[in-house]
Length: 195
Image 1 (cartoon, helix red, strand yellow):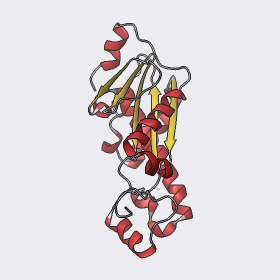
Image 2: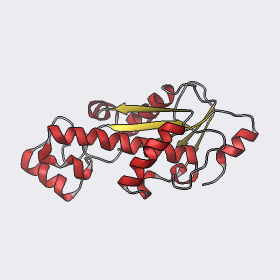
Image 3: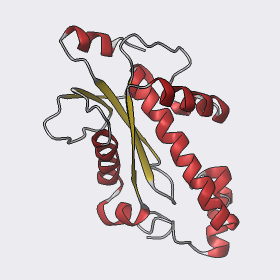
Image 4: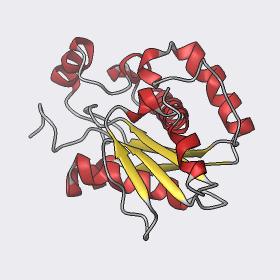
């Protein structure tokens, strides 16, 4: 992790938020974003890009991050809006919702790859910020675990698709289930194989 937050604090920023999303690629379910402001001197070498962690590591860190954070927020955009506005705009909207739900509000925002329009909040967009900046990595974990929890709930409603295993991503098993059963309510109709 690069000391991006430390450099920003030297420039006078105190409440630095990181934001990231989970669920841009799946064929089903919402896109979920999180935003996190961590305490000034907080360090945890276990916090990393959520994709590099096991489900158990993510769950443990999910609890810790929520407990230690100065503030955290979650933003969710459903499949109907994804179909209506496209996944990139839906991802930006989810991140915007996550940031706007922070209390206190940040005075600087770091986002992973995608710029987020939140009032006139100063921000920096970084490629692979979830691997480089602690508050963004923390946000990636919250977003991923929250989304996985939602997909577990959808699995109970639509067990024939196996959402508890692939979380809506286009795995072989998921594509076979779509071929056999057709789509269900939470499938994104603007994604292949539906469009």
